[in-house]
Image 1 (tube, one colour):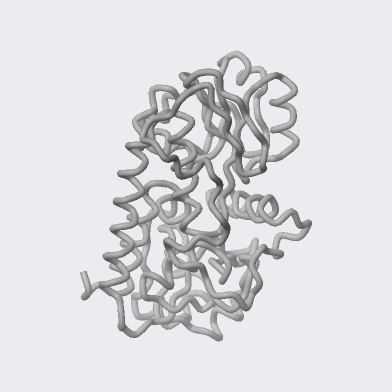
Image 2 (cartoon, one colour):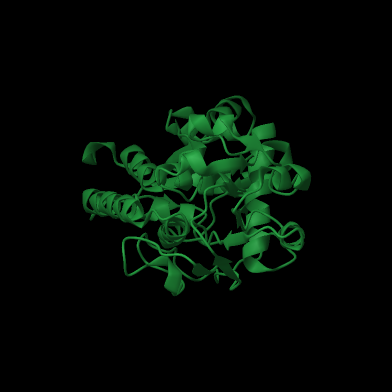
Length: 325
């Protein structure tokens, strides 16, 4: 349950940071809007995310997702990542040797475990960060503006990377990190491969009936949480050929009563959630649970907006429509 609580906290923080609201169930997207499809940007990409050349040049001005301008005199050789998806991107760009600091939640790839921990999403060890002498720190919407402000006051270069609720924003994040770290050619290959996977998935499920699906984010005594209609996970379920039973609401929050009323054809969740659903009153009465249509996947692949997200999309599609792959 601790893992689920950490995940719920991470998601609620992200929602608050993205919306600028004071309630966790407020979102940027109107609940009547349809989920974003992969490859369709919800906002105009910033000029720095799609460079004209394959190599970066320094000095360089970077306008981050908050609109802040950072001047990089030279190519960064020591960087800190304050979000798991950013850490994954750095390694995918073959720049893992430059990572000197990470959060306790940055656990992929395996070699990231050898990097110094500088805190989590909310609490940072500023003394440790300073001792690492980073050229730049990558922060995300999972972090707090107060901590970012403190870093700036300490003279640390910080670049903020948003995590919009869209598949497209993943490409933009990869592109911006690549520009900063002079790895644009590699990023173009990563993005092209991701887009190809998305296209393959769309073709494989095109025209097929969409079974109803429930995606478990949180469960139990602390409440039920799922990928509601405005989330990028909801758009992935739609692209993968599923009908998300929570597509008509926003805010991540659900309820067991509503879940039992909808009684979805299949459930997608973590290993811990599967055991709980099979053993707990209410959950175990769901038709999908009784008939064995409850499927587990690596949550990190599906919930981190990084290079593995297209792989996660294909996993979902293979689960929902196994005969099509």
